[in-house]
Length: 174
Image 1 (cartoon, rainbow, N blue to C red):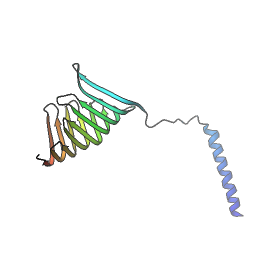
Image 2 (cartoon, rainbow, N blue to C red):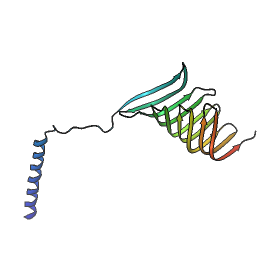
Image 3 (tube, helix red, strand yellow):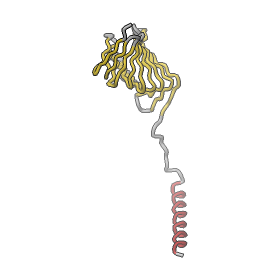
Image 4 (tube, one colour):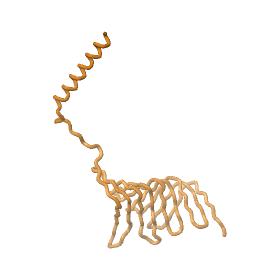
């Protein structure tokens, strides 16, 4: 008997509470604001020119532009640095910082120059200083050699590439 009365009183209390809430608010005072507003674009192609010369190009399958930030989130991207020899960077994802002109690439990054290929997990392209850097393990391979190590610093202006630490090289003599 006590359980039955308790259940009835609890049910009446819940119904009255719900009715009071519904009649008091009527949805007028509630405003929903999304916490992450974005715009997006498919097949983005961005070109940086100086004096009618294309310095570098950025292509991405998908670009997301979060409102209120100066970054573009990129998926399946490639960067072509127009120089002799031409440098190609490719990655699964990355972030382009608009005001600095930097691109941070992540997720299996490849850097190709002529017949050689660098692979690493992340990489930063600083377009103003024309530097490519990483602290991650690096693998540099060509037709007859394999060089591995940690970290990479490449100056595009000086055309110098340096593996920073723990360098191991294997050369295949033919």
